[in-house]
Image (cartoon, rainbow, N blue to C red; front, side, top):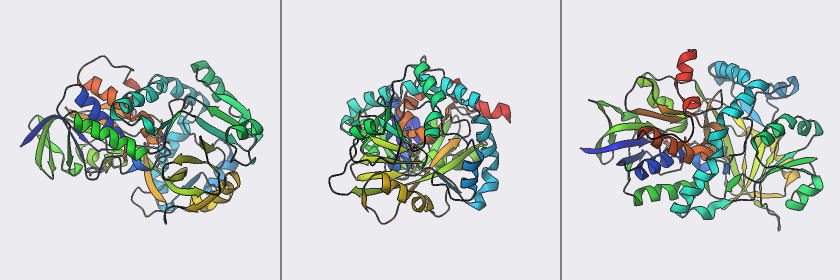
Length: 417
Ligand SMILES: Cc1cc2nc3c(=O)[nH]c(=O)nc-3n(C[C@H](O)[C@H](O)[C@H](O)COP(=O)(O)OP(=O)(O)OC[C@H]3O[C@@H](n4cnc5c(N)ncnc54)[C@H](O)[C@@H]3O)c2cc1C
């Protein structure tokens, strides 16, 4: 019977970063997944380390936008009818969390954590040899309508209050930065402090290799086999049973499958998202990752091509893919940038694990000693993976934490239950 101080379930960017921080803190650690590190949600994201994000995505604020989503005409969102009943309570809470004063409250609450997002990645990248995947050109957000840009004022004021750098650009100034774009937008905001990755999978793999180099054990196993064994946690792996004093659930969108049987029922839903790589035509290219804000997609220059990532799809996690948002947005994307042939036959699909208050759950699991949670990182799992790893390691080893962990405690849901 193998035994470690800690077992981390899930080798996405979150679990891998946790495992690496734990081993650096001097613990014996096993990292368990049914696949290779970083091959699920952490593979397919837009590669943006969004430490300078101010407001989380919000529920549509005007009736027109809501109607377009309801009528399945919006490129930025889609839904499945058979998921609506299940997702309705979550949407109700999300709507409440999208009120202007709540957005400011959330922005202030999470700022200390997000401030550390990029520095924590840089630390792990430096020791893992992954710095070559990081670009420091920033994130360029485009606005096609004056009204959308005007509506940004409050967010930009909050950003200024936080001391976050940004530049507002007109069309010509933005085109000077990205000459391959076409002038279909009227305004842009450049966030120069945002890091972007050219290959998110390679970064998670580099962190996993660093974990192994430091003595961490990587195992194949099914997290569903997790159960109590005396005062410890036991898991069946391909190499036999493993006992650990601490178990960390970092299973992204699959966390409820393991937590619900243990009596931990968190109000998490998934926002599914797709990506597809495209070649650029001729000599066209991108230096920055681009958000076409009103249309709701990103263009991210990656090693595989220009990765176009879509917004949210509310559907059952395991329902077959329905990448209809591509049909709705491709004409506008092609008008913005000369996209060529797709690289893959079919789009990739993943699921963002989301809480309605846009905060992950990080910390001890209520009522289960030795069990830890690092779930629900929503749109910021890549962003916050390394910072989450540091926080969990500090909490588990009883060190002072670099940020107040209270905003991320699971108890916030139990209290309101
Ligand atoms: C289209 C899209 C774009 C995005 N863009 C960004 C972005 O630009 N920036 C950003 O910060 N975030 C972005 N995100 C969100 C980000 O990708 C996720 O928040 C993040 O990947 C979640 O990481 P994770 O480690 O929690 O989950 P995952 O990467 O999904 O890892 C969970 C792991 O658990 C394993 N697992 C599941 N079940 C079992 C089991 N039974 N037994 C063993 N192992 C199991 C899986 O194999 C997987 O490896 C995006 C997401 C999508 C879908």
